[in-house]
Length: 355
Image (cartoon, rainbow, N blue to C red):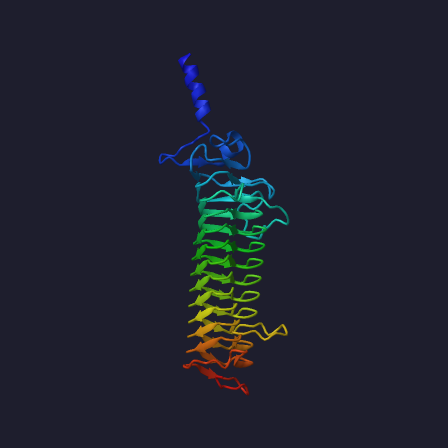
């Protein structure tokens, strides 16, 4: 009788596999055959409802059957998932070196089941060939994730999130998309179909590299700080920032449209904008284009297809180097508001005069 009771107890407890540090294990065998812990049933998605614990770790790659089936779903607050340098990958994308983006499907490698769940984190691994790579909500944290060949966004998070140290490659829409008040730092975004990085209002976007994306390299909404990024060879602007933003210390070059395009009331300080504009469309694209009420100071704008600088009304500029731009130096309704210290040099018959 005692052996029977012990065996029955083992069967009840077996699905919850704890590592020595108390982290719950997720592996392909339990995902498919037994369920990995309390609250989870056999088959995908692996379901985390928080009843078994708050911390989880992959110990084997998860091969999800199709783009209509989530890999892991989370229905709780403050859950952490360590991918452990492993992958959540759609079947057919394992070990491939070529694009395997699906043509349909909205499933995610990791997904919150409601936008109300806060404090979820995903780190240290890859998501491949799904609808979304990682789809989380409020106060999320995504670090050191490699998201590629996902049909929609590589990484998408809600308000007040931190997205850092990730690589997002060849996703169908945005590489990284965050909501307002987020911090987006140290990421690399390339060959995504739309923006490399799209950050919400009042975000801080710093130290990222964005190149060869179909739309803007970096787009940040109103009141954001965009600092120390590199954006090149993007299909529209290198950096596009909303009104009231500060754009400083960035390097933008070889983008198809403007190097930096900013709304009203921006401060644009100590950036380098070089050879932007694709010479194909009818527009002449500028090194820096800013709306009304802007302060533009200490930038270098050289060899852009249009002007070095275009300013809206009630704007001012000082201490800039503006040289060898194809259609002029400074223009726009605020172009007469020089506050000194600017150097302008023309190309050919273009005037070298700083207004």
